[in-house]
Length: 195
Image (cartoon, rainbow, N blue to C red; front, side, top):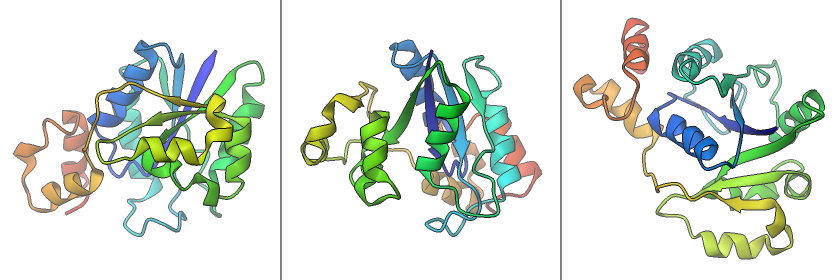
């Protein structure tokens, strides 16, 4: 089985996250996707909601697809690095192939991550590109790992969680329908999140 590890802050998780997952399965890249929200200790994000809220929203978002699941592996007292997460799932699913789902923006500096070269060498990476990404130069940079880098042909997206949080804080809930599952919107309102 081909299992994709989809990491991110998911702050909040939105429709594009689900669309990416569904497309990767539909196009045969993967059989199953595990969404792994980063823990609150992640040093590059200062405005993360508590772990529990983001985990709950991901559970709501993924419950309609039997090929999706959510892991709280990165919810730790310490920062958990991507290399550790991938190794964890590789050891957990010994008979399966582990893939890392990665935006082209993140791939562009993966060599600066902890054990970034090891990730490039030991894992298949499925790259999701945005309109603004210079994919050609990124792939050229990692030319010795091209056998491990797969570029998924998914319709480009330019939806960001930052924009969604702004709409919520501005009280423009009527504009959220095209970005968020209605159950996620309800959860956000009920719990007074991002307000």
